[in-house]
Length: 306
Image (cartoon, rainbow, N blue to C red; front, top):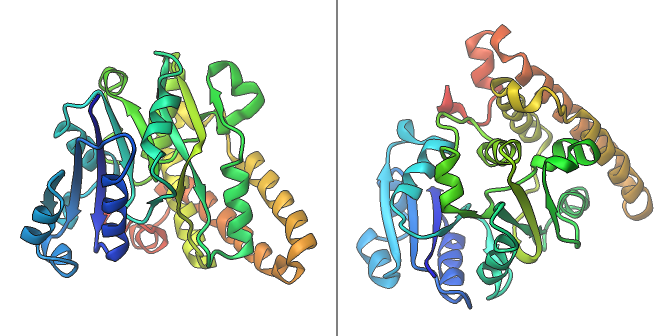
């Protein structure tokens, strides 16, 4: 059983080497670790390419320019270097929580031939702030589930929730659906998951497959991230028009506020600021076509996309 892992990188740090070592020690062996790196000079700052390939014989390293990188197309190119029946997409800052990450993702994916993708639970870093810690708990609960078209009325946009921080894909289904949408600013994982659900497939959330991954974003970073999210939703009205995310966003704010009131009431003002930044960013992103080009670029986290 071949399983390949695809990791886009940009200015990788020592944490990326920890990720590679974690993958090499999995109970389910990795066939290839396909690294799609942006700018060779940036990679060389971490470690000479020759040393990296010698130390990690399963690694396949491809360099591209910043102008060539795209969230969807770059991952598609990585998949093109794989001949495995299953592949995993990961980000360079996610770490396997244990040796059983790939084994448990594979188990979740093999619950049925109609399961197109299985994504992992994300655990917070030790230095994660309380607001982000609760967000991880909200988006990645302890209970596993499998979601399909029949859950749209109950779950809304959460039916399509999936994350390429760590997700395993069934290759035959991936190819039949045309892969990730090319020229993608962000959110290529949810766009794919939505198309899979619309085609009659299901999405598995494997709570027992765990990675360590979180961010302590500033309010401005939240604004820019949600601007790009809004752009993504504007570019794919066939998917997101019928399942607007605002309701889920309000639910997250209310539950986070209740959590902070019990544990960190001094964080409530910060929650208000971050929530306002998210909402403003998302709404501007949805209307990006009516904004000046310079403003769009300033608002976006993915400036190279423009």
